[in-house]
Image 1 (spheres, rainbow, N blue to C red):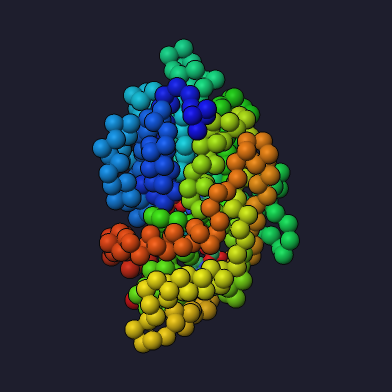
Image 2: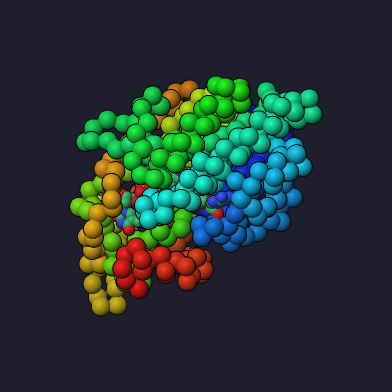
Length: 365
Ligand code: NAD
Ligand code: TYD
């Protein structure tokens, strides 16, 4: 870690109040004192200031509530804070919501990314004399493996795999990736792209599979499994993702894409079973004496449900020396324990608007 440090970086984090962003802000401030962070977040349903309780006391941290698609605000932050590094997390991130309401995905994920790219181009290239030196600037765009589409039984996504997004979410992320790439090739903006597999860990909003199942299983509610439960995702503990991003930021080659994965493919049903078993062990059986697996309920499949994702992370491993450090069994235990210890957090984020979403999505209260 010591070796990887360089002079104080003025970092704009977008979406730092969300799941991965808040883990990244905490982890970076705790471990890399040479990073000064401005967190720009609109605080949508997915953004919770409570994810960063205590962090606001750090003198290397500032929070700005606002929209990444607000060009005037973004330009002001670049100038005021002499931003030389962007780590861009902000996005609409949930596939199911993109199916029922795609417009916000186009606005935030595509137009928002475009707005940030323009601000970086203005500050780093057009104002080269007054702005920070282009050589030390980095625009890191955090993206997803979902841009590559869906795999069959075998194979894994490589950085060269053609894009084939199939949901409004993945299409909007693919579009933003293309814009980032275009700004490198056309203007020479110093960009980096990371495409990561599914994350899990503390502070994940309970609309995504793992925290939703933990929350429902704690409350003795049905555990909705889409289709046959055999869709496969490649799971990565969130702090490993944060370390991968820091590695790419510090050592990655400009203009390159790096795939990030956990080398941990699981069927959804395996994960739901595992959560039930860990909770039975830690919190006891249900009040009626039954095991939590009895709550599993197969429901109608997601439209266009991608069958399997798997990442080939050889490039980041061999070129930059990163590999995941937390294995899935340990990471899941830690995650379930975190949710057991943070019931007040769950209660605070599953308020009225969450209940409304849940009722619409799963047809029950
Ligand atoms: P999240 O939904 O938990 O958080 C998104 C954050 O962005 C929230 O704090 C929200 O308030 C903020 N935001 C949304 N629209 C905004 C706007 N217009 N302006 C400013 N802020 C806005 O998402 P996450 O799971 O933490 O994902 C973060 C990033 O990582 C996303 O770009 C996502 O595509 C990518 N990613 C996620 C995963 C995963 O498994 N969660 C995997 C790979 C890549
Ligand atoms: P999710 O956490 O939404 O991530 P993504 O769709 O971006 O991979 O879903 C993970 C997997 O779990 C996916 O195959 C859909 C499935 N799933 C369910 O079976 N039930 C649920 O209630 C949810 C939210 C997801």
